[in-house]
Image (cartoon, rainbow over all chains, first blue to last red):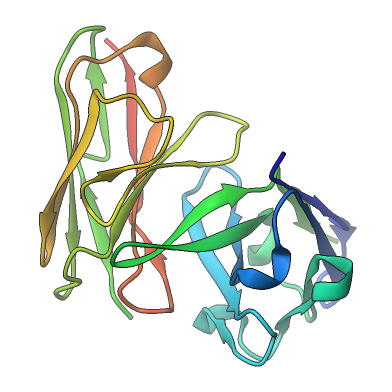
Length: 121
Length: 107
């Protein structure tokens, strides 16, 4: 079964750090670009970051540049998101997502169950 | 960045109704447009990719159309399990963006 399982979320104070992990199974992890997408409570979806197959290219939404870092370990079939200098507005469910090239563009075809990050003092 | 808008933001409909949701991009994105369905407490699910292609396993009552800047998602006959929030997303630019969502609830 194709699956993504996130971990590492929790309650953290403003200015703190967390490292989110995502374990992939059921597919050849190294063949796919991967992403993180977040959703604040009661709000819509926001793309956060992408990483290419070998980890040499990364892209971020402007609001997290310089604070978040996406990385991967293909040998461990794992995706990571290092989040630093956390702000209250970073409170959200963070989803690990597989990108798949479908016809004319990428789509997010496999989603994890999400891990909650709460930033509060 | 490419901005995405959706209309309406919410709608009430009955089982069996035909439902149409519109998505607009701030610039032309060709047909690099995807649609997702999200139910409360669950992860989103891919419904339509490349504007009009049905993802495997998605019922045929869902369809998508459009190109350039204007796109639509249509549910031909709304079923009880279709009450959810629907998001469009552009993949024309690697810095992907989502629309704000359209909540479909029961009339």
